[in-house]
Image 1 (cartoon, rainbow over the protein chains, first blue to last red):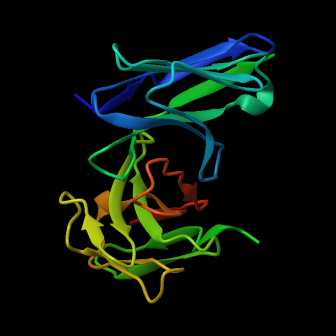
Image 2 (cartoon, helix red, strand yellow; image 1 turned 180 degrees about the vertical axis):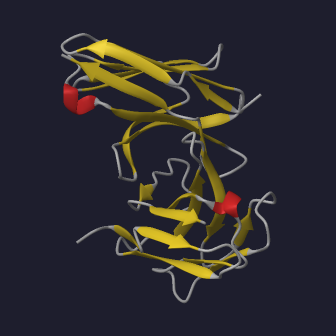
Length: 111
Length: 115
């Protein structure tokens, strides 16, 4: 299986909360990241969390980390149409400085 | 003022040709990367380079070669292009590969189509 896994699609209604999930396999992961890719553009870092943290909040974004289950989630509150994009989970382990990316989750926000 | 810029944005070429994609970063970063994103959006590291070492993903064919004239540039040369090389290629940079919290800054991508 892949090192970082995500579901491929998520569809939500505008104003609802979105939760994008990610699982990873490397127990030595130090940092975990969420990147956003809008159509025709490169990836942009949204937020990150260090592996000794359980939660990180940044305005409408909440990151939850369950290190025991190797599960990471990104919650977007009050989802807007402008949030429609592909969201990539990435992890970086202590053994390599190169992040490994998941396949991305396409978030579709409809009115 | 673009932080990481790559050219061209689109590249359409015939099988067997040799082509280059250029990348420049003005962030003063030490490390640059090339990623390949396939049609299913899977993002795979191809190369990582700083002034100390080049790390090559062993699955990358040797038809692909990175060239770095200075630390602000990392160009990607591709020889004898094949249909399967069609993808979006992203350049990225980061401050210091030894820093645990490594944040990548990406270019906007080069869509390569091999006919």
